[in-house]
Image 1 (tube, rainbow over the protein chains, first blue to last red):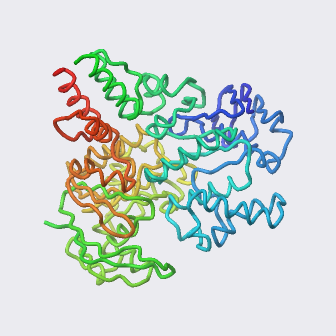
Image 2 (spheres, chains in turn blue, brown):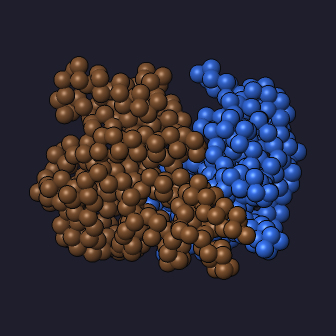
Image 3 (cartoon, chains in turn orange, purple):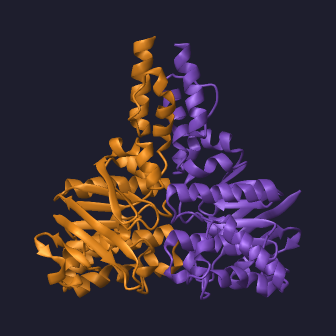
Length: 273
Length: 282
């Protein structure tokens, strides 16, 4: 679905944010791009919908080279939800905000209505339909931004730091919701350093540091590797920390969430009692 | 001694239809490290805005009940006066930064307070050092990454050396090690300088260990108020949608399966230790 071939990117102020990055994201895959602040994560994903074009190398999205397509065309396929919702929201009501892109893409009035209602319900925003996005809390504004992208049903959804400012309930909902998108065959890419969130939703992880890809692998492989994570300024999930501490008792160390931890501990106790 | 005291605080924003705060009565003692949390939209940011008078002086609307901050009644004192005592670090650093360089942003509050030049320079250097952004001194804040901006925002409040620092999700844009470093900094300010800290935070996995007082709000009300270990251990806390530390969650899940542990852990070190007790016993 997305192929990044030896991409380097230099901002106009001469800061080189990506050095020779290559990456393949398959159709229907769920990928978390993790890494320290300034690692180049956001710069990388901005290449996926053509917001940025590589200085060197190329990015191909759904068979289209991003240098040969407009952001508008690419956006139809790749929906991008920004880290800071304020960069995205500007309409007077939540409803108008969600309808805005749909209008721009030329959807029919009837479809727009249906899609807006669907998105409002999906993200539990119905009660704020007629509220100004700027009256809402940070977490709520993020949901509005997400709703407005999902409304046009893109094939690929990029979420830049979706859990920032979100409480646990919303994170749980977001997780279920990402699972739902994956089931529907969408490709989902999240940029995040929320290790606990990632530990619970088990995506493939792409770990970045200093404009390069440091490692790729399963959540279990990456989130239990302290050496790699430290280079990316990430700490182990709490459960992985606990199991690192219990390793000398003969427990496995690749346990990253509460659900698994319970099972492993109960099994261990049963065998040893 | 109480440094912040609210009694029966009730508030509605001028354009709002719903009460943002409802009958909030809390006491924060001098030197405490308070973690204030609750579902998004629960009123925690609004409550923080009362501590330095932004509510009601800037936002308008009618604030019923009383807030005393370092003995000053917020109804009777201006934001300017309260700002000397209470420093507020916002959720979104872009709302706070506006100067052409990081150094100027950090110095801005001090200039306004009329701090002498030498003292100002010292405090700016110290604040930049403490937040580890000395190398960004000459940079324009709007060019920085979210995480770097967050540090600048903290540094500019830090430079004022307030009695109380209120931080509204100050690390939400930072990577975990960066966040941990900021929490360490806040913790040192609290422990070494005795600055009272009110930290609004969802990332309890990282923040819980520093707290000695936890307040949980929902729908404008205070739902729970007490010691971290007691509050995080309650099933009610989790059911309210609070992201309790995973170590605490593991404790709850094991208790339900009939595995009894000696105490409620709130950090992974504690959890490791008490699990070892149980596993070695077998």
